[in-house]
Amino acid sequence: MSFLMRAAAAATALALLAGCGSQGIYGVSLPGGAGRDGYRVTAQFDDVLDLVPQAAVKVDDVTVGSVERIRLVNFTAEVRLRVDEKVVLPDNAVASIRQSSLLGEKFVSLAPPPATPAQGKLGDGDVIPLARSGRSIEVEEVFSALSLLLNGGGIEQLRTINRELSAALGGREDKLRSVLHELDTFVGGLDDQKADIVRAVEGLDRLTATLNAQKQTITTALDEIGPGLKVLANQRAQLVAMLQALSRLGVVGTRVINASRDDVLADMRALQPTLEQLNKAGNYLPKALEIMLTFPFPQTIANGVRGDFTNLYATADLDLRNILDNLLVGPVPPANGDPLPVPTPSVSSPAGPPGVQLPGLLPTPSASPGAPAPGQLANPGLADLLLGGLLG
Image 1 (cartoon, rainbow, N blue to C red):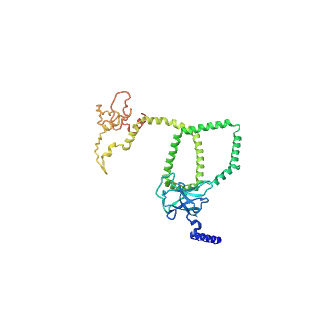
Image 2 (spheres, helix red, strand yellow):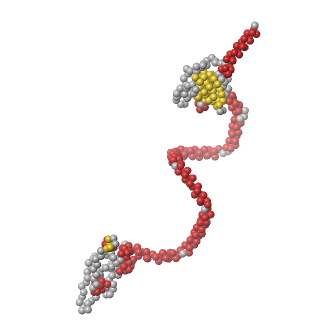
Image 3 (tube, rainbow, N blue to C red):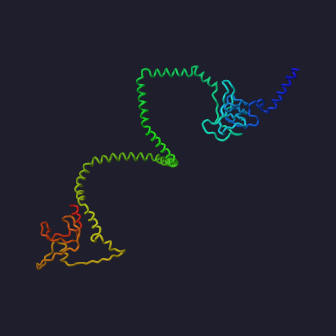
């Protein structure tokens, strides 16, 4: 009879397992789960440790659902969670794999984001990406690191470092103290110039922004400088030859200058009196040049020219006696001995250089010493005017 009861119990268990679907025992709902009415959320993890389906899903350490499925997609573990429909979580919730106790089971913990404000509402079909998922440190990992430290790993390295530092600093404490003092002075100087350093960094930032704004121009310049460099490279031999010839020219020029230095100095000293006289001539030389360009006509001759013709009114005095009076210092005495009247110029002129008579004006007879002798020209002309301007 007991055998029949055991057979019936086994058949019942097989029937239950068959009714669980393709997931087998993992398809059986456990007490405290979300049931069939909860919403499903997919959480992505780099490592799910030994998390298994039907593991608990908790919020604030309260079970609100279970793990429905775990699968690997592109080296990322996707864990589908079934959460009770009464649980309200923000759309940017975070997921982490934790352990119920030191040797307890793994479960998935859901919580609002700790550093950012909550947004929206977590719903069916939502995905919690890798950026908002993680796991806690395993006890095995802690023991493994501790064993590495205790088994001569870290402690042995610390002992080696201590021994080498002792050997390096032994007997050099004063030098080390001096180095630390200098380092303190250096850091203090940097702190005193903190404002300048910040200003320099800000200026560098502005320069970088300017260069970034002109990136296209700089790129174009760099692209176009290539052909120019190629031309320079092709003409390298000519450039070298030109520089060598220029070097030889410099040597020859230096030798010529050194050889002719005394002659050049002598020429400059001989030229000095002439330049001094030109300087003394002052404004007379330009005026004389102006008269030379229009001689024998006045400078206002251009005002009388209208197109291709000009109106000219001229009075010609062909009296021989007046001509001789204009050319000589004094009038020519008549044959009968009667004195001639002294002609008076009708046009005034600006004063010229001392001892020079401007053209076109008659001299005034004077009995003062130094008066021109009879027969001397009263109108020295343009050449005499230039000479008088040069001699001051």
